[in-house]
Length: 446
Image (tube, rainbow, N blue to C red; front, side):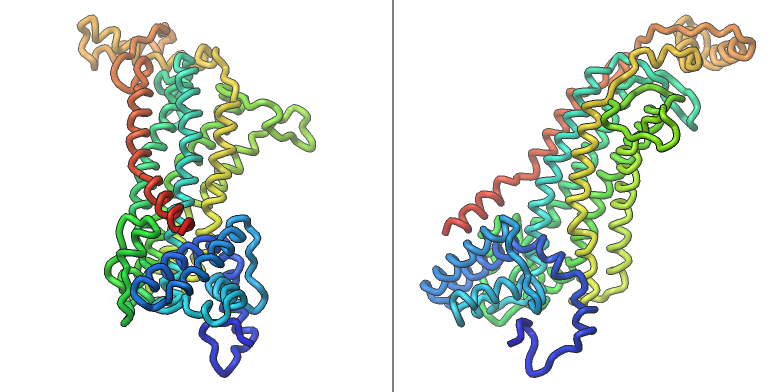
């Protein structure tokens, strides 16, 4: 007996089947609990429009809740010969309930099934990502305050430029995460729209109540146009991947800085020895492999939106099998970025700071602008003061003024960490995860 929803009186060549299925069965396990949630909402709606009897809804709901628990525990498997998670769930219901199990597909296509699965998956995983980002943000802010008075040189062109601080450096990455969170919130809004009921991309002759499934699944709105709901496949993943890539870009730059600042040539920070690795030939080495691998992993993630673009950019409207391949790197990307963020959070919390780093004579010239500004305050025109200090440097007569008096917003003496934190909390509060949690809790309790 065939376990393919579409197969009729012939079988597909085995090599063709292997080639077309690819890694889809493996990837579908990411979507398993979300597929069940979509089915629960769909059958509740079907009963409301007269396409299921009340006792059929009760039986299907009971079994779907049981399958959901199995999927949530990670114990649901897609059996050999079963094409995807949609087929597996329907097969489970049919085994348990007979022909009633076959009724869950009325008014629905696998196209809108996978769309709603992806939207629910993305929504949930964005919530997890915000929590991981929040932990790193807190660590950066805490260390920024702790080390705000530890002076290090800032650089332009990798040349010593002007005074900075460990606090200023770490606080910059905290604020960078704020912008990343804003981008992620936009991606969340794109994902938080209901495609269920668009069927194969052209709607259905059944009187489907799409507003009802939107409410049941806790979406902010639906994808109204059935054609556009299908066009959103690939586009949604690309937009979300761009948000992930934005986070990855911030963390990659932080990792690169950390590699430099941990080296003996800089010596601004030091990783505890248990967080480094050694060399097989040089006994003195303590390598920052964590930050090096973080940099590489983040760079891979930054390629993801371009990969999705290349899969989708020459497709017309409607569904095409090309879209299946997006899952392979997109779905695991959430695990990857969350693992990265957790490790970098630990590194930021554990790093040791050299409080005397800025006193190294090699960095004396970073105070040249301070000297210029002192002369300007005394009434010397800026260009004349600049030339005077330049000549002192050229003739070896420059004496650095080590007392700093930076007071403007965002400067060494006024990092504005409290205002950065307020902005972070404002953006974080806009996600409104509680709404969808309440909806899903109600759906599972019916």
